[in-house]
Length: 208
Ligand SMILES: Nc1nc2c(ncn2[C@@H]2O[C@H](COP(=O)(O)OP(=O)(O)OP(=O)(O)O)[C@@H](O)[C@H]2O)c(=O)[nH]1
Ligand SMILES: [Zn+2]
Image (cartoon, rainbow, N blue to C red; front, side, top):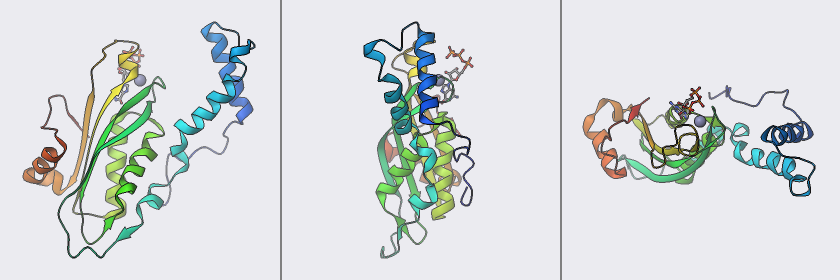
């Protein structure tokens, strides 16, 4: 991942006008007329929205995380950023996934600017995702760049493909976690983190 991001956008990316034509096709598929006044600008709006929703392919997690600080007076306790709200889209239905991530690490010699932890969450959220993969990607990126004693990521999210269509179960949320290093090896460290973020090993939590 450090040298080559497997999710980098393909070189044969369609043009904006090709994307707009695809949206007109979908509007016709939905049963409406893309030539009517209210829908005339919709294809370009949707293309712009896609650029916003999926801007994470352009961003490099290594670049985001590499600004670190070493003058921390030997601080080596857990650093936890909790309740990082994110919006993503599921790769099966392109439906929104809305939730929050909790990210922690145990620094070795250096700490990272805390906004960068939120930026890494956004970077992966702004791609087509399944929650398990996004959870693992965030943890793996932090581990690889910062090389801390441990990394923990918990994500709780609601999937609109499950709440507004298909099985229609509003109020459900999926909880996933990835624990690396000390968080995986040491139950007390893991418990301390889960207590900080208020997730007490909820039933149905998926470890990835
Ligand atoms: N594990 C996992 N599954 C997800 C995620 N997002 C969506 N899904 C599920 O992906 C599955 C896709 O199943 P399919 O049977 O291929 O699709 P479908 O016919 O639209 O299924 P339904 O949603 O049950 O109507 C569904 O069960 C979704 O609930 C995710 O982040 N993680
Ligand atoms: Zn889905």
